[in-house]
View: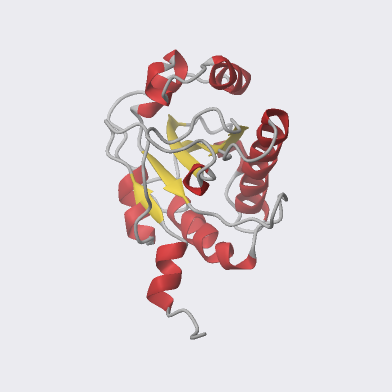
Length: 197
């Protein structure tokens, strides 16, 4: 078996900048700090106030509705966001070493002057391969793990980061619930944060 070239590796560890009107992406594109900054920096209106627990409950109770059809998620769907492919060890919150390069590029982008005044929501998703409760718990712990790595390893101010797991409840529209594409992480720009003096 031949080793993977760096371009193929980048494609595997990629991010897709979402247009503001698209609520759920179907695939990822090549990652770069410039793409992340441009993709997450397109905030054109005030972001809505969020409550993490309300978002979690709305996802759980939303049934088969797409993210954009849920009231609070629908407001967030209009914000700049990206889908990030971060690989974890099987049934674990341990991030695979190959994903640290992607996390480093995300952190570099979050330190960029165009983004450093913004808050971000890390949303963990799961496919429907395990129990509902297990997937909800695992996706939340994985979102928390990404938040922790960005804050501790890459020095992103933790007060700028929020994390929520929604399990298998918001699959990519048109995909099977157990499809691997539903195991994903979203970053959503929540708007300007207030610095404490």
